[in-house]
Image 1: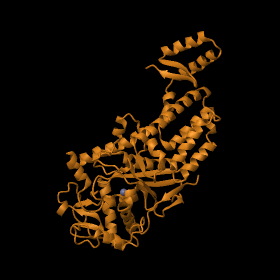
Image 2: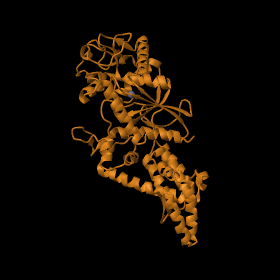
Image 3: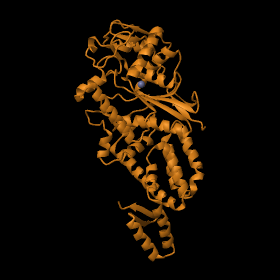
Image 4: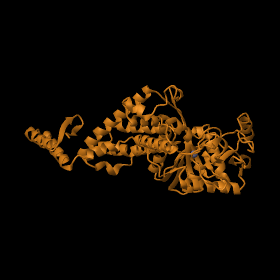
Amino acid sequence: MHKFYLFNSLTSKKEEFIPFNSPNVGMYTCGFTVYDHTHIGHVKKYVGDDILRRTLEFLGYKVKHVQNVTDVGHIVDDADQGEDKLEKGAKKHGLTVTQVARTFEQEFYNAMDTVNNLRPTIVQRAADDKSIKQQIELIKTLIDKEFAYITDSAVYFNVKKLPEYNPFSNQVLEDKIAGNREDLVIDEQKKSPADFTLWVFTKGIHANHVMKWESPWGTGFPGWHIECSAIGICNLGEHIDIHTGGIDHKEIHHPNEIAQNFGVTGHEVVKYWVHNNFLTVDNKKMSKSKGTMYSLKDVTKKGFSPMALRYLVIQAHYRSQLNFTWEGLQGAQNAYDKLVSSVKSLVISSSHSGASGRAAIESSYLKLFTKALSDDLNTSKALAVMWDLIGDSKVEDSIKLNLILKIDEVFGLELNQIESANVKIPSEILDLQKQYEGARAAKNYVLSDKIRDQVKDLGFEFKTTATGTEITSLN
Ligand SMILES: [Zn+2]
């Protein structure tokens, strides 16, 4: 297997990727909180994860990709104060909590399909009965091992029981506690302001919480962080190779997951933590009030293709901020259009020479491409390798096409659909194409005209172009 280097947020270094049980890879991705619309910032984040997964598969690993759907318990400020995002979303959109969850979950996965992200192997909702059971089990263990305690309003994780709180930052726990002291502390029985909820009782400020379940400690709902520990460990075991998420989760959500994992298992569960950077619009944070929280629909309404957006994302590195502008997207659209027309002409010219190039898939280009991706997913360099290949007149067209399609297994720019469109042309027509080209080469135009008419009767048209015969369907 080719050596693959990945930046690990735990060590702040590029490390050689060595999975626990090669060639199997367990990959966990924090999912979407399904209370509002999907925007292009989500597209950037999840395309980043998709490229990582596709790269691993390209290198020969078998990836089990698990993703949660947050449909309960995510409190507005990420910490424990305020309202559940789902309940807030339900009020805002005039729907029930379940309606709001299903509506935006569907919208999210539709958007992910549209930008050609592979669906995770397992998608699990936090509020499913199975997930609730798994979360209750984990909380039980944390209480038994004295990493958690119960007050009148919630079950809390006791962060002072940990040897280290946030491995992603140099911030010591005492500083975090001092920083939190100004906050409104709702529960006076909390041992430390940095402690976070594992289970919230539906009383006091949460008395009207719609979603609630029975637990050994009282009726309530799970805190946000426990779902990722539960769904991760229950599906991938106590040793997870990769955990991905947005860079914003380095502050609260992921340190809390690590704390829970340690409390349950006594060790680090995740080996490589991967964080995707933000998307900004016109160099500013996306803003709903300024109208810059663009959805995929906003992009397609202006005539851009979803693949142009994917191309734009791939041009940047996943750990860099991507500044979105409409001019930038136009540039990506132009490049993508050029790519599609290059592949189209390769499809046509390759149909003459048949499949002779398929055995020659290994080439220096593929090696360069693999090398770029293996360096912490250097996608912009990998794109440059593809363009060099396209411009190389010494490479036979059919070989070139096969290499590009192989490369696109990682990029996911739907270039294989250009090929499959051609495959739909019946072999009878392709045979006539050969006879037609033979007749034209022999300057037998009476015969070539006759073949062209015959093809027209069958519903197709031949057009002679600089690169060969273009076949179009008349239907
Ligand atoms: Zn998570």
